Length: 438
Image (cartoon, rainbow, N blue to C red):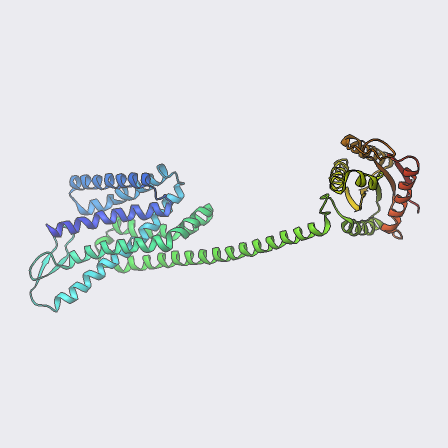
């Protein structure tokens, strides 16, 4: 009875091993629902095997039907319940059947070790196994009929199954799953050798009679060793590439962080802390660059010099805090007046602002200048000391012209300042345009 229970446990554990390892390779999440459904599925498959085994009553015929009774249901379960692609389902089963050999070898080793120990003891009996369907020599100790090499084979296989499952789950399942999920090509390449093993080492054995020939162990060992070596090599190679990819990603993240810090530093250097627009340093650097560039390729540069009218009296009347708020509002209104990317407004200093426009004709320049004046007026900031109006206003001086290599930024600034002076002399709250002198 005990010997029968041990033999039965072998088949239960191995069925559970094949199904559990396959669904782990396929990526089944370890939730209570999945565990319950998987348990019910395993019980149904096991009961189906018992029923069909009782019906066939032929171990050799039963082994020929075994792929249909065990492997195909697992593939269907992975496709239907886990909703995984058929290719991943098949590859998972092929890998599992390759791993299935490890517990079998552990069981065989345990059996052979038992035989060696038993042959050196007294009270050893010999017999033939009757419950496996295949004639096997049975060596028992103390004539018990229970403690024999066949039972030790079964117990070793059961222990090997649990040990193999633990090792696979800890070291092989995750990289194998990532490799199969990467692409169809990687899944095909990874599953090619296990598939060949399945065809040659399993189906060929059963359907050609090699299962019961003396060459079976040698052929199976060679196929298993080759397939296992290939799978281990692929997993190690994949692990190394993943490690290198991770190091590369970390390097890129460090570089990206450094670039962000650099840009943040540049932002602090190039932006005015009060108004949030570009500062004088950015203006000087960019103007020099633009003039050098357009002097080679040709282009038109326009400079706006803008000054808040009677702003000193505004600070004296409303206070410096209100003056800062006024500067923020004016800076935003001026920036909103520009429509094209590449055109920008910078704070020149104090209450003075500068706008830079590239390749804009005179009509476009005047249109933008009027828009700036109207946007400042629309703010409606009261300024009772303003000589031009009862609210905050701005005067604008503009110069524009084709860039020549002998010109520099100061030439444009000085010409725009002349135009600004004319606007103030003519009553403020207006713009004046002067062509750039060649």
